[in-house]
Structures are given as structure tokens and as C-alpha cells.
Image 1: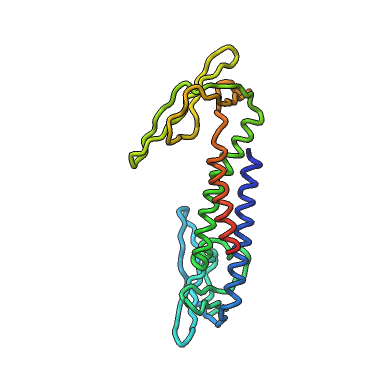
Image 2: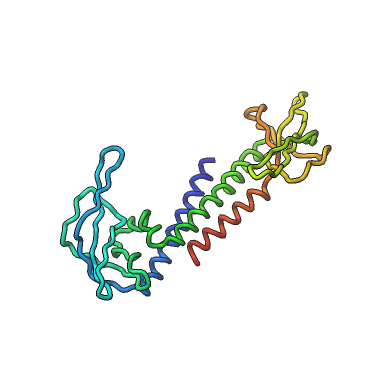
Length: 237
């Protein structure tokens, strides 16, 4: 399972990097670069007692003075009076930023501030993609090693939602190694299950007391597809 987790983080990190590069590049094509001056520092104190400083840069655009706090902070106190190049968003000077001096300045929190729509879409995509990814890969690993047996829907349980809706969860009875067992389904349905329906059940050979009904691919596949779509929109829209 570890390899799937690593791959997930690699995918969302690559999409994040591509998105930031594209959005930053598109912004700079229409932006105006003006000189700025470091006039103060914003102090950040961590819970462990450490202190970092973020430059406060003053600049002038269209006859008006503005200030911005740099998203990147360091342990060294900034030198007051140091000049910085400021990339000004002509339509919204308050969302301007200091020209990147290091690759890590692409990271949060400046990204969310300068590209809020992209950051929001990326985070939502990462959540939906993650839910679908982790369930499907976990299910894949489980059933790849599982012993598959046939079970029958013998009853169902009900769940009531916060808004009064009711869903039904199948109870499947199956036989393994001469003993009868009952396992609950994973997915609640809005309709009552049909008693007698045959379902596949996986038994974990490493622990025969662990069972899982083979179902739900379509449900979590929807999460995965929505996540992929949101990640693509965040990077390329």
C-alpha cells in the first residue's frame, strides 16, 4: 500500500507544480514589473519558540502606494531598504507579489493568495482524487490476495441521514472453512436490497476473520473521476 500512497502524492505534487508554473507564467505575461523597497518585517513565531521573518515590501503603481507581505519567510531578519522587483497585477494591485527568487516560493501560503481559484480547485481535486484513489488501490490489494467465496444477501440494516433520508446496507451470509459468517456491505443504497442476491466476498488469507464484500468500484470511481477533472482544471484552465 505504501507504493500507492507515494504515487498519489507524486501525482498531486506534479499537478500542483504544473499549475503554479502555468498560472504564474500567464500572469507575468500581462503583469507590470515595478521596483519595490523592503520597509519592515512581519514576525512569525512557531509553537516551538522559533522565529521567522517575512519581508514587507512597499511599491508604487499608478500614483498610489501599496504594501505586500512576502509569502516566503526566513530565520534572518530582512535588510530594510533592500530593493525588490514587484510583479503587479494591473487589475488588482493588492494581489501583486515579489518576483520569485527561489523555487520554493511557489509553495503555500503565497500560492493561495496569488492564485486563489487555482489553489482551491487543486485542493478539492486532491481530496476527491485521494478518496477514490485510496479506496480503489486498497480494495485492489485486498482482493488480489483474497480468497473469493460466494455469499447471499439474507437481510439488510438501515441508516438514517441527518436530513431524514434512509439508506439500506446489505447483510451477506457466506460459508468458509465449514463455518457460516455474516458481513455487511460497504455501500448504502436508497432502495431495499433483494434477498437472495448472490455477492462475492473476499476472505483475507493472512487473517481469515477479515472479510470484505466486492462492491463499490463505481461509487469510488466517481470520486476518482471528479478528482482528476478538478486537478486538470486547476492546472490547465
